[in-house]
Structure formats: structure tokens, C-alpha cells
Amino acid sequence: MKKKNIKILLVDDEPDILEIVSYNLTSVGYQVFTAKNGVEGVAKAKKKLPHLIILDVMMPEMDGIEACEVIRKSRGLENTIITFLTARGEDYSQVAGFEAGADDYITKPIKPKVLVSKVKALLRRLKDDTEGAEEIFKVGDLVINREEYKIEKSGTEIILPRKEFELLSLLTSKPNKVFKREVILDKVWGNEVVVGGRTIDVHIRKLREKIGDDHFKTVKGVGYKFVL
Image (cartoon, rainbow, N blue to C red; front, side):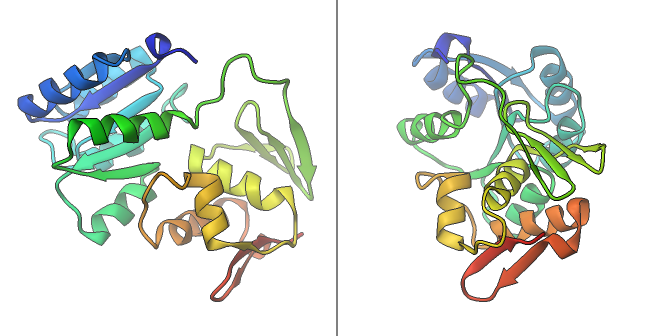
């Protein structure tokens, strides 16, 4: 997908951040829209349907965690890539962000060139519109549609955030195979993106709640596998 067709929404209550980040992203060819709080950010996300949303955590009216949760439940935004850009680097804040449906977490201050590099890495996850045909496969009582990012369990559709879908898709690609944690991080998050050590655990817990605890087995000190 060409840069000029990629839409990025930046949501932050600091005018300087909006200006600097917007300038650096537009200068390399992206379409950038901005919002100064969570409420405005949600409204603009629903209107513009961006490919990537960069959210601050601490904002007036509606914080980034709340905004992320609302966005994830909004039609047309289920698979939008969401990353937090915030000065808060505490582990609990990162876990809260991932539980809300975020894909990544970037701590500021961050140099403009590094931020652009991070954004490029995140956007590599987008499928090119011209890529292959629809890919659907069945595992047990699950039907997984990789092209449309859809899951059906016993005929009922289950909506999953992008990272949860990609993690489930990986594990179900080879049922009963143990996927090492480092392999999961590389395949689902990409080796260019740094995420916290608890990221996989948070996403596995969410999948257990939605798909069923009996399908996921933890192999201590190694990783996870999907069992039928």
C-alpha cells in the first residue's frame, strides 16, 4: 500500500506533540489527522477510518485507555493498528493498554526519526490490497478467515482485535505444536517492535476468555500451544 493512501490519526492533548509528530509523518508521505482528546479522537477515528492510530494515555475528557476500548468496539475499526505514545512507562500502564486492545506501546520523548521508523514497522503489518485470495481454514469448532480477520466458533462470529487474531491464527496453524515465546513475538509483533514481557500472557488470557480455556496450554519456560 502506498504511503499517500495510508491514514494515520494522532490523538494527544499537547499541541507541540501534535505539531511535531504530524510534521514528521506528513513529510514522509502519510495522511495525518489529529485530535486533542479522547472524545474527539474517537469521533475522528469513526469518520476517517485510519489505518494507524497513535494515542496518548493521559488526556482530558476521555483518556487513551477508554478511547482505545471504544475504538475497538466500533465497526470498521476492529483491525486498525493502535499504539500508545506516552511518557508513562510503568508496566501496569502498558498491560492496561494491551488489555484495551492496543497493538504496541511507544514511550516519549522519542526522536522524530525513530518514531517514523516505528510507524513504518507497525504499518508493515497491513496487508497489501492486491495480495492473494481469501484464505479460510477450519480447526476444530473454529473457522478462521485470515483475509477478513474473522473468527467463527460453532457458527457464532467472534470479534478479535488484530493482535489477538494474529496470535490465534499462528497457534492454530499447527495445532498441538508448542510455539516458543520468542517465535510468537517475532511472528505476531515483529522483531523490530519492542513489547513488554507480559504482552503474550495478556493476549493469551483474552483468547482463553473468548475461545475457551481448554484450547490453550502453557508450556512453562517455553511457550504456548493450541490443543483440539
